[in-house]
Length: 295
View: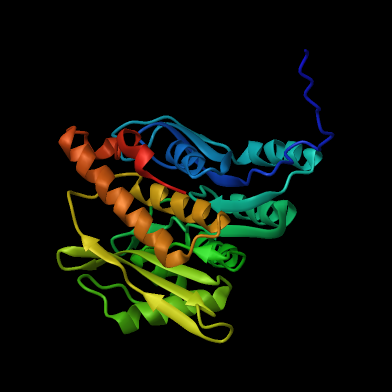
């Protein structure tokens, strides 16, 4: 007896599977940005749809690299998606390499957001108290505007200081200082704020803040989950972190649970990379333990 499979008349991109667009650079070597976001988000059962902001042979921590600014192609690229009538359950942004890209990304968020779309902005602007060499004051101002469109924002301590005009200092940060920055960031628009990589002696933490919180409208909650610091700083760990937060946000996972999951997974990735003697610039060998990551 023959088996007949009925094909449903659906518009392109429509299905019951959730999907997230991730706007970031693509580096062929050195695990970071889209090359980590695609497998991590996919592992969490969300389709990852990349929008490149730049194409690199390898990331810029190496002595030499090829860099192709994708600004001139981004609108043509996303116009095809507009013709398909696509919308996404999640939209995440990472490295933006020019001021013009901010306008393109803002329009993308407006055009491709549907009911319930989770927008996450990872404001990659600087570290260790300084903005990156590629960032101008105009771009920092544009980032504040982009943050206002986000539901979730994941700056590190330096980026939190830049966005809120808070003086940066080395050493441990007090809860009151972090809460003040988180409230300031929340006032820009995001409902959820995660200040990442907060140093605390031999520990490292992530300060989580939610407007409304578990108590309902008008209340707020904050926590600072910490884990023991292991190994040295590695490229791409922030990209893995934000990929997990975005996918979990789409899947409705509570923020504090998602942050603990992301921090624990990155710690295990670093330990595995040390064991396999992976160079720091090569990032973390998350492939070895990707199966441990659960939706």
